[in-house]
Image 1 (tube, rainbow, N blue to C red):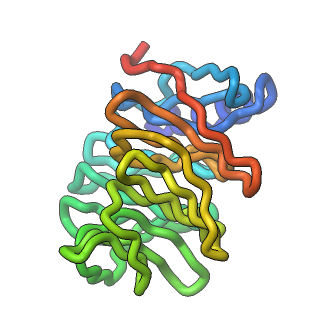
Image 2 (image 1 turned 90 degrees about the vertical axis):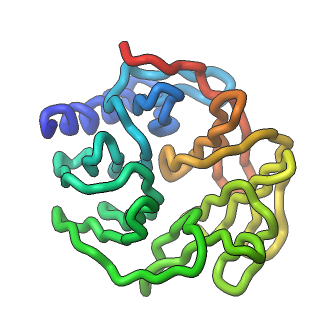
Image 3 (image 1 turned 45 degrees about the vertical axis):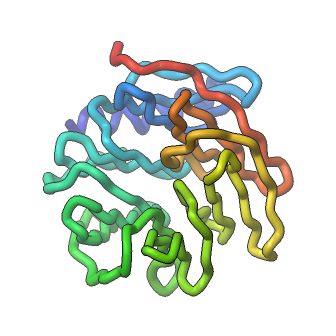
Length: 230
């Protein structure tokens, strides 16, 4: 497994040399693939990981949950109970909340340990901040981010810079820190995957999309329709 993980790191570097890498996507078949090119013209790599249930990547590192094993592109792995994860990348480490067990874990410097965490409601998204975590939860009163109501959202993603992606009622809305927003029409959003520091995957009932997140230059585009391991 470590050999495969080291291959991911080298493959990502090679892709960036050949064509700009937008990040790593999770296709409909549970394969993690590098997406290279520009929004108007993308290509994908062969699968880097297979059997992936959950994925999160930054420019530095990738994390995945596959077959009850937590994996990272730095070559570390941990066996764990759980099939559904919510991630918050923090530098070269990450927090991972396992929805199946209701437990939060911290992965940092090759160490893996439990963190006390008692949220009210279903955890939808996490974000690492200097003194810990922010998180969005679904409660009987709707989706909340701390004291802030996000309405009846279908899915939420918390960007590292403080912006918030909210999907619902056929609209993908990107809230800025100042309270303004940009809307994109997109039906059937089921979830988000952090592809890199500059790109977020949007999983929908009709296919996979991606949003480039550079402030002021956001762009929504469809990802290649791949789904089986090669």
